[in-house]
Image (tube, rainbow, N blue to C red; front, side):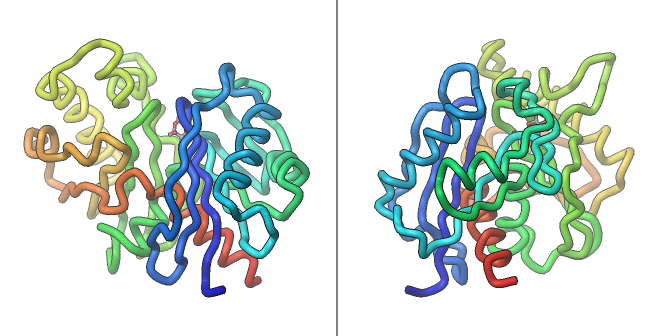
Length: 252
Ligand code: BGC
């Protein structure tokens, strides 16, 4: 049945899933999306994931399942909850998903998953030195890679700039909420990326999240020393990264 795995990307507003060809890093089924259940409670989200797997038609156990989630994830426990219910903090997410989906699952931070997809199949292929993947969505997700190796759970979306948690200013959701033009949003992104640049001196920034498909409207407005490029796996990065990690760990 080839090298395939299911990837599920849980976000603050939607849950997306597909079957992924692990060798090519490509979706081999439709991408299914459901709304994230109101309140983002653990059981409701796990039940939505079960339904999505049934809808994908992969309810038998042959495929490993990788799940990415907007929180710090250590040893299968979610340790934060920025845009979902606070009940995720300290929760054994691996156990919850294993039980609800009735199979072994692998849970990882969403930006780490998206970054893995970019490093393996996208804009980060062959990168050297420090690469910072950023996802601009409901929050700002970040993933650090040194010579292609992930340093997990970087939470740099919450950098404090001018006294505020800056994801509340520079995430794509802030642009939508405050009706900002691309120029106004880019001024905030400039502050955000130049702070990252000053603190970490990276070699490459990769910009993902759904809005990265409109990268030509805002990336050219940024003045940085570091090369900054759009993600190429776009809206499917989390799905592809989570699936490929689940596949790799099923082989261990
Ligand atoms: C969370 C991160 C997550 C990012 C993107 C942030 O608010 O703290 O864990 O990666 O949002 O969803």
